[in-house]
Image 1 (spheres, rainbow over the protein chains, first blue to last red):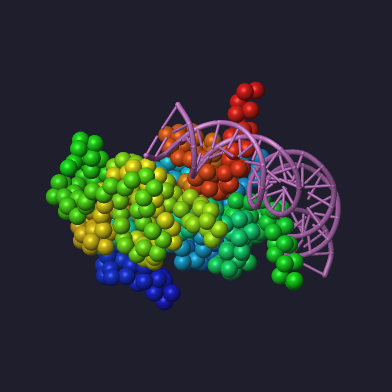
Image 2: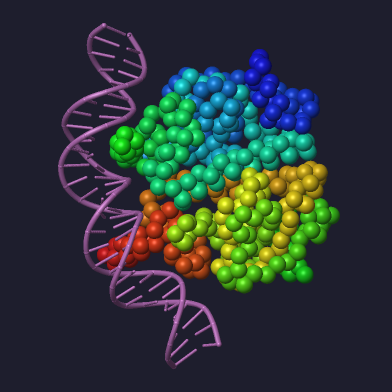
Amino acid sequence: MLNAEDISFYLSAFKGLDLKDIYDVVKLAHSKKLAAGDIYINKGSTQQKLGYIRKGLIRAFHLKENGDDLTLLLQWEGKFIASHDTIILQQPSRFIYQALEDTVLMELDYAKVEPILNHNPRLSATQATFLRSMLAESMARVESFVLLSPEERYLQLVREKPDIVNRVPDKHLATLLGITPVSLSRIRKRISSAGKR
Amino acid sequence: MLNAEDISFYLSAFKGLDLKDIYDVVKLAHSKKLAAGDIYINKGSTQQKLGYIRKGLIRAFHLKENGDDLTLLLQWEGKFIASHDTIILQQPSRFIYQALEDTVLMELDYAKVEPILNHNPRLSATQATFLRSMLAESMARVESFVLLSPEERYLQLVREKPDIVNRVPDKHLATLLGITPVSLSRIRKRISSAGKR
DNA sequence: AGCGTTAATTATCTTTTGTTAATTTTTCCC
DNA sequence: GGGAAAAATTAACAAAAGATAATTAACGCT
């Protein structure tokens, strides 16, 4: 069930917690497999799913009237994936969460976990730690939109997440950066021609 | 010391907590006044200040080499203000926090509060509630950058925060939206001429 | 109230982005 | 491995945004 990697994850994520605490949460989790292209959470869903990605990659996107989509979030192995609409805002998910690769998750029903988190002080503190790290990530992204140009945002992405850049089609990276795929292609061209000089 | 407004805030913010819990935190707070223009947190500061704004308005900005500034955040009465660099990332603040109006804060030293929050289960849960609401706000902002055009972002700001729009110079709103003041002026012109038609 | 400062608008020009469509390249699947 | 589908690039044009500077408007202060 648990491999060495998972155990080392649990121990680091829940650092300072004893096995009983960890087990109280982990026992509610089950494994779930998604094939590339499968939808994990659909638009309109109210299920409070919380997934820990063991392997694979999931993309959250907004579907426009005309069929185009805009990527809001990418998460991959070692990260959590959840609809913030259902879990934080307690409203139906406005976005679609889809596996871009064959993906394996440990899934939790947040509605079931929440009472446990809130009644165990050590778990509450752990929860706050997770929230802080998610907040830091989200704020860093806001910063990038305010402080950087599209080109600089792309360079930052390549620099900080080269692996992800290679695993995800450029068109999704483009909308994640707030630009169109055509514009990203031009940026890539500018960069490569500047690099030659 | 505490007026009716403050008490009603404390009771709603710390809903479900008893007075003893609230007092454990509030007793560490002190009042602080800032005149319009005063710096609250300077670049490089490592002090873990956490301010609850009773009155006034504070702006966080990045100062460029050439003297220009880019606004990252605005907070006003009823909101908290803190350098996420010092509190979450535990690094010196990269940004400057300045009062745009005469401002009154209740200030806490987060380094002193944190152990109390982490040793009181009810306060830990309250802390998580705050983090969740901050996360929701930050994610909403990321969404706006991915899903909306600059013009749509400005319209959203006017719609959702008309009061703030009236209290803050447009040039700060512009950079907050990720555009230049000149560009915002053109957007405003486009909107008003479209409105006439 | 008037003066000096700051902010906002406008103008001009350059650069970048968006849009749409065509073309080339890559990927995926049988 | 070959062929269809998807992705990426390129092209051409329109629209928007950036940069800089000049002008006008609003604000702050004594």
